[in-house]
Each structure stands twice: as structure tokens, then as C-alpha cells.
Length: 95
Image 1: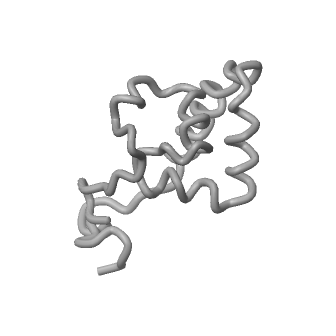
Image 2: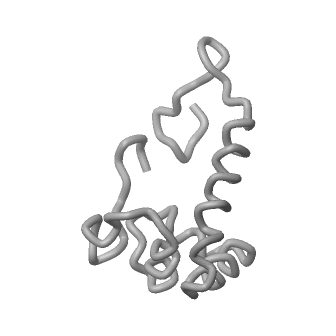
Image 3: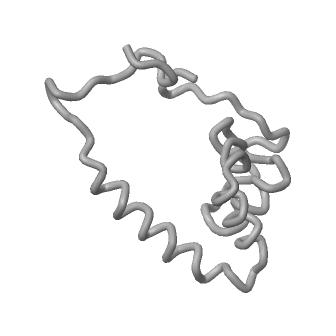
């Protein structure tokens, strides 16, 4: 996939993803994700278990908290910027 270009895999398209909540996981487990990266989540045992866990509405309240925790973790990754960083010409390959 190139940056800014994502191959849609679900037949329902973006109209089904009008909100970002725990319904996202229901769509993913039904193979109705929007991007290839959504489908890839089912290839990992840990994320697959998390997705099935969040299909039940009883767990909806934890989704927002878990997402917030994940965003904070991603903010600490330490992305290289300026002359130290690099934008990939094709996102699956290092330049």
C-alpha cells in the first residue's frame, strides 16, 4: 500500500464506519473492515482475542479507555523527524 492509498477489503465500504467505537471490532470479525490492516488484526492471536472480547456490548465501556491508553503509548514511540526521519515512497518497503 502506498501512503494515502488503502485498498478497501470490505464490501460495505466507509459508510458502515461512521463512528469509531466497539462496533469496529464486530465489523472486523465479520471480515468487513475497511483496510487490509484491519483484516491483518485477525492474524494475531492477541488482537483476535481482543476483538472477539469487544464484540459483546458489556465491554463497550472499556473500548474508549483502551483506545486512549494506546494513543498515549503511540505518542511515546519516538518517531524520527526532520533530517533524521524518512517518508517511505512505498509504505511496505524501507527506501
